[in-house]
Length: 265
View 1 (cartoon, rainbow, N blue to C red):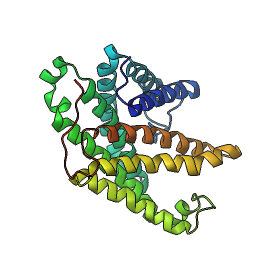
View 2: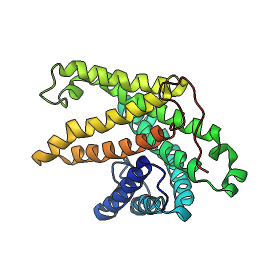
View 3: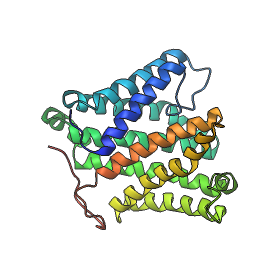
View 4: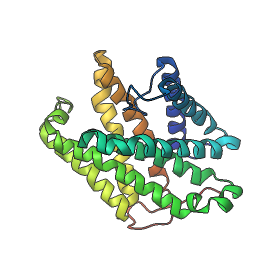
């Protein structure tokens, strides 16, 4: 086994769990939603997406298959982004369309980062644009762009966000706007590379804290709706993906404006 980072391990386990969940449910997990009920071969896509998640998660845990697993998942998510999520920008409402698009951008960035880490010499000779520093830079930009809809949703629906703030925290509306602003600030910082390592780490931490402070207490009450369970699952997945991207800055000083990337050899 070759575990490059804690984020790598968490992302692999998360993909395995999503794959198993999809196979058990016999339906798309929240990672792949929203999907129209009327699409052709829907059941085939359900099981294909679940198997891709499961196989890639397992493959990421082993040295010989890590590059193939990361590259395969990356390619599958790019296709999903182009075929399903891009039309959502025009088919769904502003928040729904951009949120699903942003979610997929973040999930695409993580296996791209992992692919740059585990790419073999063969991959680097033939796919240098994807596996080199430029590819890693683009993956980080995708992650940064994916954060924008999360922040936007907080500003467009502050009341719905505020009700999720734990009761022991004063000023729920403040936290709704503040966390929305930090998502957007992190996005800008990552895209233009101003303190990018700090921004990536804090954005992943914020998603993780959201799961810990908001969803864990609700899960403990056993009163979650199916929609809320989906939100729990996607929060875990996005946090794991953010952890991977944050780990890609390991060779960058924490407060550096710009830094070199880290490609595993």
